[in-house]
Amino acid sequence: MDNKGHHISQQFDAELEKIRNHVLAMGGLVEEQIRNAILSLTENDAQLAEKVIENDFKVNAHEVEIDEECSQIIAKRQPAASDLRLVVAVIKTITDLERIGDQAERIARMAIRLSEMERPKNQYVELKNIGEHVASMVHDTLDAFARMDVEAAVKIAREDLKVDTEYDGIMRQALTFMMEDPRSITRMLDVMWTARAIERIGDHSKNICEYIVYLVKGKDVRHTSLERMEKEAKR
Amino acid sequence: MDNKGHHISQQFDAELEKIRNHVLAMGGLVEEQIRNAILSLTENDAQLAEKVIENDFKVNAHEVEIDEECSQIIAKRQPAASDLRLVVAVIKTITDLERIGDQAERIARMAIRLSEMERPKNQYVELKNIGEHVASMVHDTLDAFARMDVEAAVKIAREDLKVDTEYDGIMRQALTFMMEDPRSITRMLDVMWTARAIERIGDHSKNICEYIVYLVKGKDVRHTSLERMEKEAKR
Image (cartoon, rainbow over all chains, first blue to last red; front, top):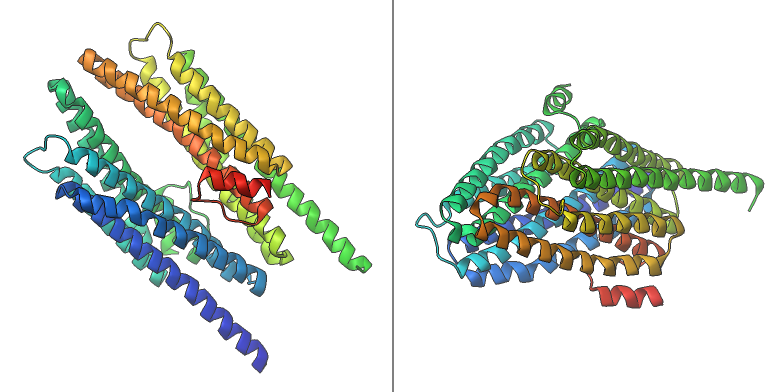
């Protein structure tokens, strides 16, 4: 490669690196939003919940900025197929991160509503557990993204099955409560919506893990079974 | 422009046109999935619901194919900024279409569950109304996409506010039912999940409308108020 080509390629790598770092920064903020949303719920801290709701615009701003960076890099650099895959994966990843942010905001809104109602003795420990579970999933997903670690991505996708099981348990329990004590219906519905929002975060994490596998392996594993994803990862 | 340039540009336009048509075909299928899902619910037709569930893989397949077409066109044609915006808008649009498809599948699953329970005299007319409302929104969104009609896109986005109001009414009614007759809780929960899935389709339609405004106006209107979107559309 001649000097000029080398120079351009270095600049290009630096720009890609910048986008990747921007995604990780956005991801870090989203993770913080989830953790604070869950905390506001279990610690009965409506003020913290308000902060989460206010901060959602920051998540949205990151998405718009990174989209713009991606468009610019494609227009300017005409990237080759493999780099292009990275850019497309980034565009899709930040869409999911933004929606995780929306769910965090939703959890915070529920935390405020629940703070105005009678509280159970266990302070919603089951929501705390599933909430911490998905927050860790998001954390690990960002790690896998940073290291382009396919095996980790597949492992996290598998973790989502456990979240679904936890979610089913919470829903069953809330339903039982409602039937036993109809006065708890309004509150239990809010618990259900919260559990659903948390479960959706797990789904979005799983989506991002699939983009990582697609990115590294070049095979589209979306809409395929976990077993096939695992097979692809091992190739 | 020399002859060769002209020739390439014609080929490029034809490829872009092909992608646009593919998006419209995917959208047509998604609209059919919504209408059948709602029909299966209100006509108590579990067989039709099964068909909707089975057909979701077709929606997914479209998404994967169009993604691939978009990646190829970027890699091969190095499109200029405005064409690139179209490709990025397509990548985002099909993500939302795919998720609308998921919601249609979810409605069909609820239709099967509800078909096994006692039915209200009105045959869930309120779900039928809101369901037809969002199906029309999706139809109009695809029209606006085909004609790149910004004013129509803004009008549809405004329509989503009405869907949200209908949704709130259904939720309140279901809650009242639950409290009055705790034996109806399980069934009313399914009604609520169905209403939520329908309402989410409205949100995804609105997302697509925002991409259209972005595409034509070059301004990112996501995460901004409807008022600002309307102002942008009029410029």
